[in-house]
Amino acid sequence: NFNEAQDDCDGEGFCWNLEWDQRELQGSCVPFCVGSPQNLMCPIGWGCFFSGAVALCDRQCNPLLQDCPNQYACYWINEAFQCSLTGSPGGDAQPCNQANDCTPGLACVAKASVPGCPGNATTCCTPYCELDAPNCAAPRECAAFFGVGEAPPGFENLGVCLKP
Image (cartoon, rainbow, N blue to C red):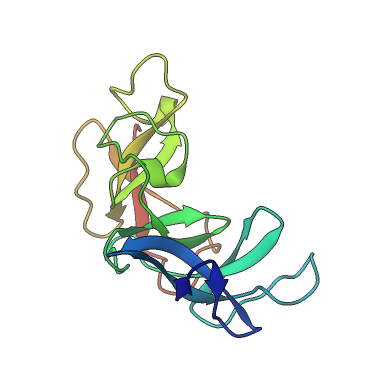
């Protein structure tokens, strides 16, 4: 919890994701990343990200399940799927600047891969899909999110709807 500018997390973590709860700010204690700058680590189920000069851990998640708490969504951030507050989420084929600019269940990818992406955008939102049960709207097709042999355990079937 974060009350009157006091971080009451232990020395192993930091108060993060602050929100107003009635008349005080509330947050969650998240662990610091540990290890050398070249090999930062987090507990199992967490991924490391930088917030300014501080390296923090954030819960990992599944973009197909969207298994994050309320007001959070599962996005690809810093080489892992992590729960993040949603920004100003755009829908399918809408412009995005960051991963959390898309509605939960959508990825932010290069404009050339998304039919209907507006001309002034460089990246747009498109749905995640399952390679063995694709549900992409034509003309998009479900393409593997990870390269061959690069998918972490449990994500071998993850795809994203892209222009063929």
